[in-house]
Image (cartoon, rainbow, N blue to C red; front, top):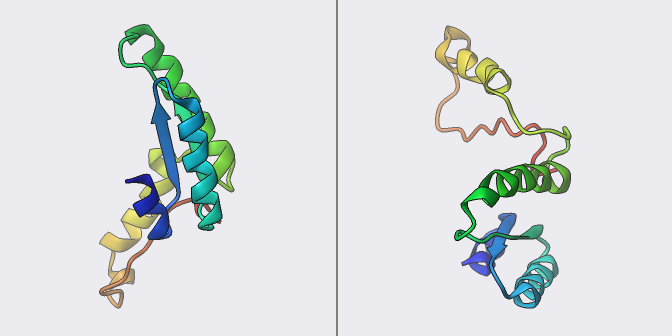
Length: 105
């Protein structure tokens, strides 16, 4: 699945439980396709580790993929939503707009 997403030009975050070497090999293969990827260890049997995993995932996304150096907050997206709901956007049609904060730069 991760390789399929990378072939479509998407960046990927993989999770693995025990086979770190395999996950790292997939990350290298994705890099060879010109996409970005990160692998994070995650064990669903350790419920206490979920908060730490979420923090690690946020840090990985922020550091590896986000040009703004932080993840979006609701007010970051709100301006675009307000614009799209206003008469100022009446001429926008059939467009794909991304409020990513430079996530894909």
